[in-house]
Length: 198
Image (cartoon, rainbow, N blue to C red; front, side, top):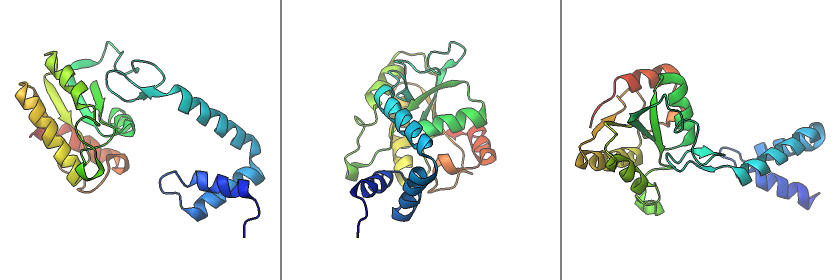
């Protein structure tokens, strides 16, 4: 029995978030409506602004409000080294924990032929253009240590090798089947400093 179609719609809308099931969505909806209406209004306003104003960096493809993100536009960054990651949250984690001073390239996923995700969907044509400029000396492959992440790393390493660019991979220590976003800082830092050639 539904008491309010609008509450049902709100609960269903909250379920689009990863890890949020029906009960969690219901708790969130009732919390916002019963105890924090100003917070709900603020959340909806910021969410609307973010959806309308945030796009992809034209160089590295991370999420940003600008045409070129703050990392790519920072002249102090080492443009001879690019770290290839699957998501913008991986950029944040690596930058915070490892002290990487190079640039990034965000794939926004990994190769997955069964899901219709190939090189074009990952922007590998843009990465190829970056490599073709001849400035990049090392490509650090920091895709997730999953089957798809490994396949993606192999594909990208072949792209680099054909252009005479050194391709390295994060060292083991990052658990297989895991996601970089959930690895503890010490493990990620160690794996990043002990990367190896593919």
